Amino acid sequence: MSTNYFSLHCAFRHILVSTINFLFIFLGISNLAIGQGPSEKRENESAFFSDLINLESTADQVFRYTTTLENNSSNPQVYELITELPKGWYAAFKTRGKQFTSIKVDGGSKETITLELHPSHEAQPSKYSIPVTARSDNESIRLDLEAVISGTHKLEISTPTGRLNGKIIEGQRKEIQLVVKNTASLDLEDVILTSKAPPKWSVVFEPSKIDNLSPGETENVIAILTVPDKTIAGDYMTTFTAKNANTSDQAVFRMSVVTSLTSGLLGGTVILITIAIVYFLIRKYGRR
Image (cartoon, rainbow, N blue to C red; front, top):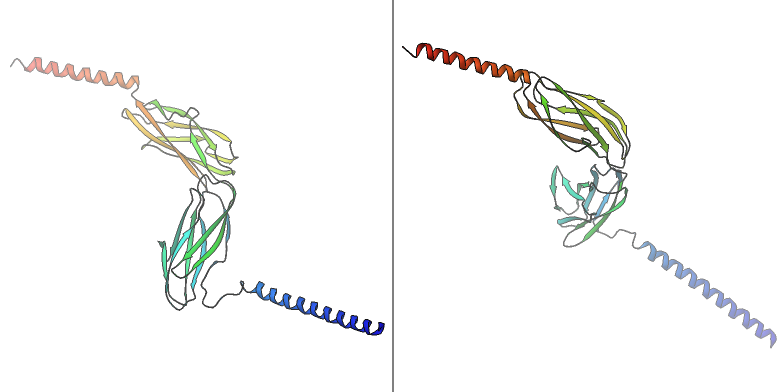
């Protein structure tokens, strides 16, 4: 009796172990098949992809992504391109040099599409997710892009007081105090000072170039403006520009030219002499 019980117990144990192993194997194969299913591309499923999905630049630059839209169905489809952008950003889709919002792709064909992304000038350094969707009547395909803002380049040029006007006597020169400030988050290198003045006027900057300007830093610059002799009195505009390879700014300065005392006296003398000559001629020949 004891022997039969032991044999029966061993047989039951062997069957139980075999059953459990079978269940583990079966469930493992099922899970593997289920796990692989979504990653396998369904037949005739279209595609929307880009070789580079992550780009890094500054907020004042344009991010350009080259994407490919494949219509793997047998019929042509019209796709609408949609982006979800942060506030203040702007996107443009282009192909063959033309901008569009919807595009027709023949069945079994593909189109190369350039996405130009313009960040907001106020965008802070960070990584931004840019979902892009190509949607037709039959399907919707999503492409996830990333734009990394490393910082911004921006500067300002003005005067210490903000006043952009003054007076100068013709034939003389005047020193104008200017301030150049880095208002962004990245260093500015090789900032050049230039000007656009009326004909025959001259402008010399001291210094004429700023090698480096850290964020928040300012640099004082003197613009020496020279007005030629015999300049007609009036208001004249001179534009001062500070720029480098990444950004620029301008300040338009209004200069009022006045006549010198010597020129005024000379002009008055000429007028008086002219009046005297006319009076003499009238007195002399007017009696006849």
